[in-house]
Structures are given as structure tokens and as C-alpha cells.
Image 1 (cartoon, rainbow, N blue to C red):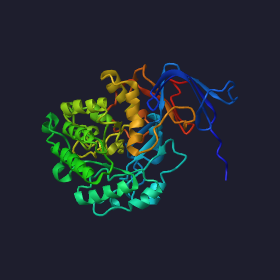
Image 2 (cartoon, one colour):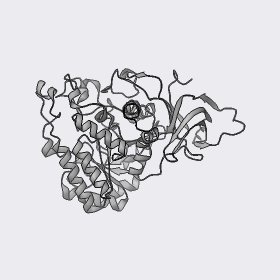
Image 3 (cartoon, helix red, strand yellow):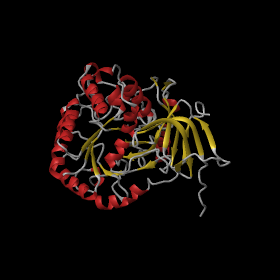
Image 4 (cartoon, rainbow, N blue to C red):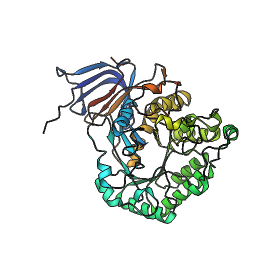
Length: 432
């Protein structure tokens, strides 16, 4: 068996370090050796890669709680390899994959195939709550947890039977795992694809009522109160959902929620054409929903950002709003969209912005907080928060192009990503 060659030492010079775990904000050098962050030695090893990083922002590698890699079953849209490259190009070192592959990830074997050391990120897989994601009987949660499942969800579908969901929460609590829920009640959502807006009327599209999400969130919170299990509510889109989570957290319940960049950046009123790239589940809320989502991220009610990266082969998203599948990609734009909207426009402190992508998600999973402290694993990213960047999906690492931000001009482009000491992404044009 061949012994892996350790990555070369790396010195990043004059970067601004933003580390929420230690509340550190300073311009300094970072030295990486054999997969760890270490003090800069008096004499550098001869093979050290030295990079001038003046003007960049260095953060712990981002952690995305919510991605879809379509592997197995949808390899034309994304594979584990292409998805991991897209994540690295977005500044991510860790991602939580959703189990709605084909077949669904409800066995240890399907879970463990994602632990590939050749991938550009480390996958922290979520497993199914129910067998086959069919909502009929619980999966073998004990075996899945033992095999490395970090969370349980039937994302893409809700476990709408309260008794079954309560049983899942009780088992998750015993296993010390978080339940993540795609909180949309199918009976209320019906065939809906869009919130009420001018485009819905113009293109005669069936309405997705906000109550489908709000009632689901309220039902999940009631079950959380009943069972004491940790509950994480995914890709929220409604102001009333935020209010319910805020009340639950004030009451001391172990409830968290996430906001996705597209729900923070766009509202139903922004849909002007029959564009399948703007169809997502849950759909874009109205402007009041958007405002409340942003405020919840700013005040920490929503302690995590997550992309809900949902790739689809280009031909499937070009069929118009009604025929296109739900979902947009987001890994390669997430940092820049949220930096531009939340930091530049809303005044979110840099430490809080980075926390929403690092320590916040880690706390939800119950894992140690990512940090740039000496001795920590060398998982980090560099960002350019000065130079404007035009989003060009044709240049993405993802196999899919269903991006709602094409041609937007943003700041906060990832320049370099290092995962476990290994250079997994480098913008060779901007970082020489």
C-alpha cells in the first residue's frame, strides 16, 4: 500500500484572520504543516509554498449544513467529486449531504461511500429518517449513527405523521443526533410551485401557500417540546416561521434554523419571467418574509446559513417554471452573496458573518467549533472582499448551471481553500 505524500507546508502572509471561536480579528501570518495550523517557525522548510495574502480575509473553512450531490442516481447533475470541487471553490471544507439520492441514503453502505479521502471536502452525511424516505417506517437509525450519520432528515419530503416524527425524535435524542426537517406539509402545499405574486398570475402558476411551511414548523416545534430532541428547521422562507423559532428559542427549546442565500436575496416579486431557475422548495417568500429572514440572521435567531445546493442538469431547468424541478445551486456563490447582502448592505459584523458559516453550523451538529488557533486542523479559506466579481455559471466547478445569481456583481469571492492541510481550491488569477 502506497504511503500518502503529506501536503507541502504553506505560509499565508499578511492576511486578516477572522476566527469566531476565539473572537480573533487581526492581520497576521498563518503557517500550515502536516495538516495542522502551527506557529510560524524561525526557519521555513525548504519546500514551503509562500503566498502573499495581503488584503484577503482568512476564516475557518466554511461548513454547509445542506447540500445535494445527486450521487448515486443523478450523476448528470452532480457527483460526489464535482460537488466537492464546487464546495471547495466556494470556501467550504465540510458539507452535510442530504439523503435524497437514488437510492436514498438509508443504509450504512450508502453512507460510508461518501467518506472518500480523495474528495475536495469532508462530507458529514445526513441519513434518512424513514426507510427509503417513504414516510412509512423509521430507518435503522442506530446502525446509521454507528456508521457515521451526523444528522437525520428526509429532506425533499417531510415526515408529516406526527406520531412517526415523535418516534424519530425520541430515537435521535437517545443517539445524540439532530433531526433536520424540510418543514412543508404536503397536504397544504398541494401542487403549488410559487407564492402569490404578479408572476404567478401572469404565467398561471399554482400557488404554494405560506401556511404549508408555517404549520409544519409549528408542528415540529410542538414535537420538539414533547420529546426534548434537537430540531433543526431547513431553508426557511416565511416571516411567521421565523417568529415561531424565535419564540421556541426564548422558551429554551433546542430548536435552530437556517436561511439560504436565495431566500435572503430574492423575493417572489422579483420573478419577472418564466424562469425555471427561480423555482425552489420552499418557494421565494414576499418582501416582508425576506426582511424578517435577514433580521433573524442578523440577531442570531437563525444561527446558520446553508446553501441547499440543489443541482439539476441544464435541460431540466430550461423547461419553464411549471415543468422545471425544484432547486438552485449555491455552493460557489454563497460566500459572496451573503457577504454582499449581510455585511456590506446590512452591517453584519465580520465575526458574525463567519460564525453563521462555521461555529453556528458546528453547534447545530454538536461538533467542535472550527478555529484557526495554533494546533487546530488546517481547514481554512481566503476571501477577496475588495474586488468586484461577476458571477459566471459557465465557469463553475459544479456540473449544473441552475444559478439564480448569474451576472450579479458581488464581493467576497473565495480565493483559496485548504482542507486538512491540502490545497483544494486556488484562484490562480487573483492569488499568485
